Image: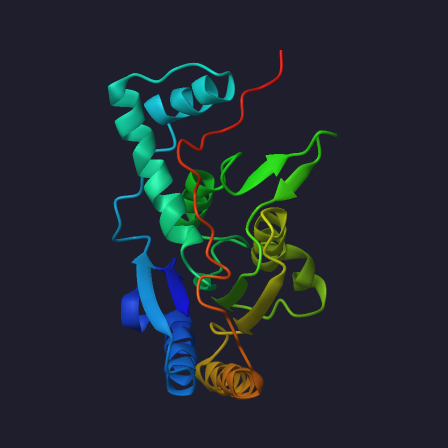
Length: 231
């Protein structure tokens, strides 16, 4: 069972979000002997470009054009990121709220991997279909205020966006742990932290994950590319 931990905070072990994720990972590793964890730190990783030649390559592929060797090499970096993402059975996203939304590094990563013909496709009726099936996703977030209810709830674009974009590609088994409020006072932060840690441990204790070997792994067909647009 493979878990990909996607870290979207530059603060490392000092991060409130990472503290919660660390407890979650420790609990999961204690319960599931066959669990392996791979960490992708978005602020320490040289992510593939989603501009320049790769943007041109994407639309050349979508219109059935041939890529030269240089463009193929560049586009392959996008494919490597997609392949790494698809290789996991479970995803853990460690995501602090920044200005009501997700950190720019995570948005950059999502823009790189969510590509037509890889994570989603269009059917004969022109409707999008997610291609990432049989996966689980856990999102650990932290927020300075409390966005669980009241007037601030409408400003929570973290959970709504992540549910939308990953649901779009086929991941519907999603669970959120939101540490909040973390910036009101030290006393309130301690209470919030204790609450979310309790929720994390209770979730792991009640979980019963079962993955058949390779069942949820998605192989990228040889030569896969965005499907050519119809004339």
